[in-house]
Image (cartoon, rainbow, N blue to C red; front, side, top):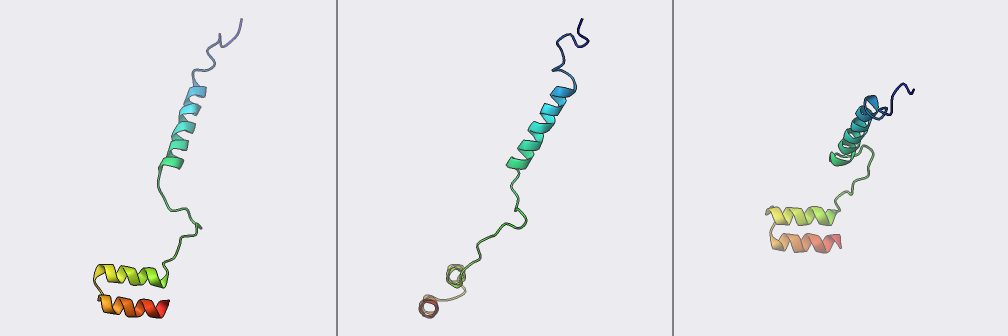
Amino acid sequence: MDMYEGYYFWGMHVIWWFIWIILLLWMFATPYQVPGQRSRKDTPLDVLKKRFASGEITIAEFEELREHLQ
């Protein structure tokens, strides 16, 4: 007669499946910045567009500075 009598799946094996599922969900569902990941830096034109959108510079200044950048 088998010692486990066919119930070897229940017990610690099920707990490990839950641990793995929770770990995988935590790894892939948690948004975070990966260390060492290259992030795109803003170009000078992007910075100029942001300044214009926030109202720091006028349209005349924007056009003049854009011409200098291009």
